[in-house]
Image (tube, rainbow, N blue to C red; front, side):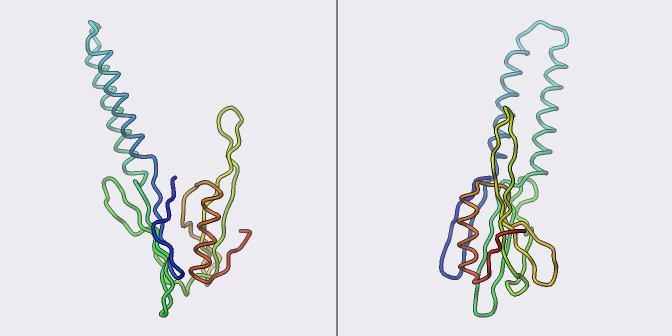
Length: 172
């Protein structure tokens, strides 16, 4: 996920996270066009069944990804004299804009960063992080971001802690 801070003042921080969903959908469309371009001119008797199968598979994958992954997320953290709010919105292909989570700032005790190492192909290890918010009356935590680069999340966490004047925990 690519995170970009859209607003940062002494009492509020807002950012947007974009998922690679659009690029994946375009890749599916390109794969569909290429596969049809190779199969349609052939004289094979099953060519129309193959075209229908590939078209159906691409449509099902595109619909599934559109329902399972948001296009982008917007988070707004604001401290006001009345208390403030934390709001996380998600923008979906089929569902539109939905509020994923919202809480008054008074109900939050701390923010914390989770770091984890992921192994990619070729035994390459990539460390990623995400920002969490810990609720004051519960031991539950809610994620404010998805996995992203460690430096970006740490910088974002410091900005959020400074804007809200709440502590930033170092451990979960």
